[in-house]
Length: 237
Image (cartoon, rainbow, N blue to C red; front, side, top):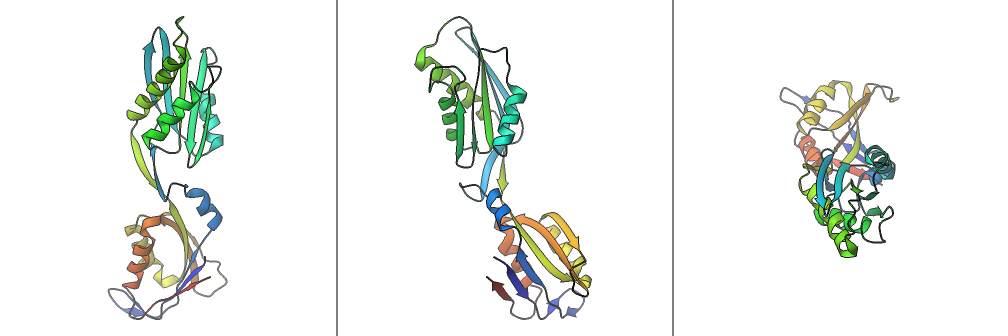
């Protein structure tokens, strides 16, 4: 929804300025793609992590990595799987999307336990591939479930994680002589992807666009309000 802010008067440390600044949300569709179904923030792993365990002479190697979508998941799989292994079983989670594969193991004994390990970990945007080299001793259905789920869980337990917040794209039409003040405020909120466009078709007006953490939007607006001597009018549609 486009949002406009009319600021009749703007205070800075040195003087008072009278200008018009308008705000607008940009690319709503891209924002929806960015936000997961689990909310505005999610926990993922920082880097690729490997965990290895031998169970009844079979070697199990779990490899976990951060992914962003299905395409990056299959790219990760192609990078880490071993064609010489007996099985390359896997599962991944992106928001509310889960997929798993038993890769030749009895149905439900490999991919699903890996998926359950991911779900229990609370980690999102992640894929776990468990490579098995058969050692000659069959584990049985229960043994396979425990083996695949166990090494996947241990791998994720050892993984360094980070919190990723959804970014809200915003834009501000700002007079040239306020750009410096605006950038100072934006830096204090650690916004990303700052871009400036001076070809707005309006004399002396530039468009400054950026992305800000979803939980910082109101605080950023309040910071701008604090520099104004009159009420700010928000226009939404």
